[in-house]
Length: 619
Image (cartoon, rainbow, N blue to C red):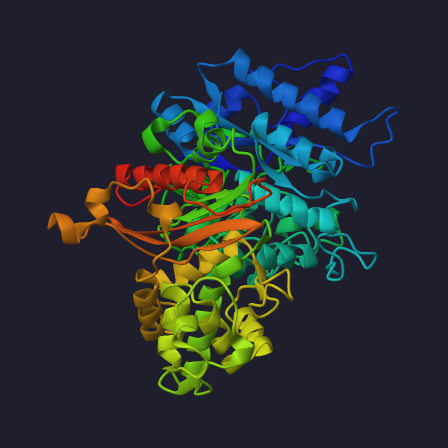
């Protein structure tokens, strides 16, 4: 049975020994973990934490220096024993190392304050190989509050969670695919991650609060939330986190049977797929009842079966760790075993290197993989807001508060210049609500848009947008460019989520999603998404070939922005792509505008990736 351990403090102990003038060898030492013990224990993966104690009173102690020195310990270990242990940055690395008979070592951080509140330092940590980090240890910092409460270890911290800087770190960690570790985080902080995060996360060394009431453990509600997000939890060997009386740690036991009971509870509440080990070895704890802990493989199946004879257990394989890492820290997946420095995000960045503007990208293959570049950046919507108005209309229609067959009249107050056909029909023209919505989308008719805004009400539209879950999207004003400078704001993530839910038949209802999809397929202005696509696939009426690729989308352009997004259908299925641009210098609209040219290149890059991987971003 292969062992997968999410947390140990060995690097800290090796650094302390070196500073004390008594360096220890990683090959064999008197610590809980060394190379010999890992080999005897049949380890697949050991995560090594660069641990920082903000309460360190050593003269000149610096959290960043401490973290970097422990990272240096990790680098030296990997360099000294390359035939026996190797670093991992992606899921593919674990499989490669296992095939070569090597243990995998993953670098993590325990105490996000070592970054000193700098997102730049966080990025450099990622470049050094860090793939998981706790926002806190046991001290308050600029990112979040830890699970510490004056009331003691049985009273959770529910008032203080992530700070503004903490939310900034969360977004950047998710963008880079660095795993957010919620162990040590307050209850409020945990739920902040659940509410504001979008990716699977980990509790690297936490047990079940229902069995051991220490607040460092997870409640059943937390376990379910972690599991539903696709996350993972590591079983901690520390006695007060395992036994029933953490207020008297001297009376607590650390046994295989207790660990097995916590594992069974995780399995019952969240499922077996979320269970890993998170030994916390070389922390302040020392399970004295266990001899040579790693080499005894930590929790043999016979012990687990004796503890819980009715629970069905099976030995772990590489499948669960690789699947979790692929969903989280594996930016480039395993496509062609691509070098870690050539992630799809970095290839997009290379494509945009000479672009004199800012482009953000969100791609979702609807198979569990995404590509994100500035996905939470706020952009002016221009006409992309019309897709959200369409969604609000169908939500109101489902409630009986709007009638798609009702006739509405074009009034003089709704006139506006720009795209569309209604101005040619003249004031007084009557259209059914659904026809008005169709005009709003397929030819981006601005007058039709104002008619629907008046019909539904601006406040109602925004309430519907919020209710549908698009928290960062707002329609600020009707379309009157002489009066209002802003139309709407959104993020690439929100816009992509709208199309993803339409593609899955989940926006308002399956029937409503199908109708919106049909309208969006008729949209005329999708030159950014399809400009560089092979025309043979798009012009099936001319070629007589089957319709292999089609697009359902809504674009939008104003002086300040050039946006496009939608669903791209391929023979392998659909994917969602959103491209948003701002901060460029040339505000004149023309087909070969740099934002269009570079956007088309990125869109073709994504299409090629999807086709090569048969419907997925990463094969």
